[in-house]
Length: 274
Ligand SMILES: NC(=O)c1ccc[n+]([C@@H]2O[C@H](COP(=O)([O-])OP(=O)(O)OC[C@H]3O[C@@H](n4cnc5c(N)ncnc54)[C@H](OP(=O)(O)O)[C@@H]3O)[C@@H](O)[C@H]2O)c1
Image (cartoon, rainbow, N blue to C red):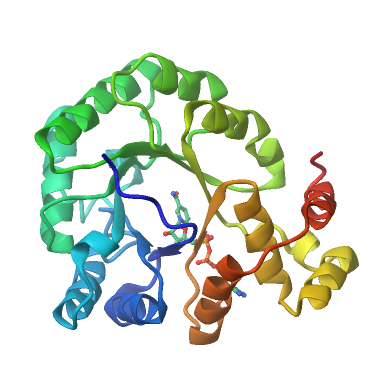
């Protein structure tokens, strides 16, 4: 069984040589869920492992953490830094990527392994999914999921035509896709955790809206905290990749207060959603 997913995840993209220090700080402040990827172009997965190891050495237990990483298909990799044999078949690439993640993260199991994106065809995506299922059966991966999947048809297939169902869908949360209304309904129906990224970056119009700001002020919170909290009330697990200690603390604090249902509805109204 997968470990319980924390309500908020710390994202580790683009941190380069600051990755281990920032992961260590995030864990020290109270984050328990970490998102990364075996994709050297954007993530220093080894740096994540170093930050985690530092905290484990000081008493944090591996079981208290939720470590999630991704298999990134060849098209998403820097051709000069592919973390698996690029000529190998898809199944081998996925197994090698998973082994590399285990080494980088210095762990014997992953709480979550996501396909970073669907493969070019649905057939290949289903083929990749079967390899993820094998990894779950072998015990090195506790749960599997997908990211950047904006097709309800494909996602439905993963929910309905597989033996091991998705545990997470990680998508960009923005207006262009109508905030994934249909996909999020599928997640609710199938018990999948919907994880949002680009949550603040893509929604300045919401964060700057006087109605959100008034709600935030009433609770004594920042607009970002209020928005994150609102999404959590809807069962969304936001990712934050903040590099600021103050923002980390604010984001963690967002888990600890409650918005009235009416305020949640007002904020969803700002997204154009019921
Ligand atoms: N699956 C994918 O394809 C994919 C793609 C992109 C990202 N991700 C994941 O999602 C994570 C988050 O990425 P993101 O694109 O959502 O953006 P992000 O890295 O979280 O950036 C958010 C921006 O908002 C700012 N910010 C302002 N107030 C904040 C507050 N209270 N809390 C947090 N940030 C605040 C941050 O600045 P400060 O640093 O100054 O706080 C930063 O510039 C990544 O690290 C990665 O793990 C996944």
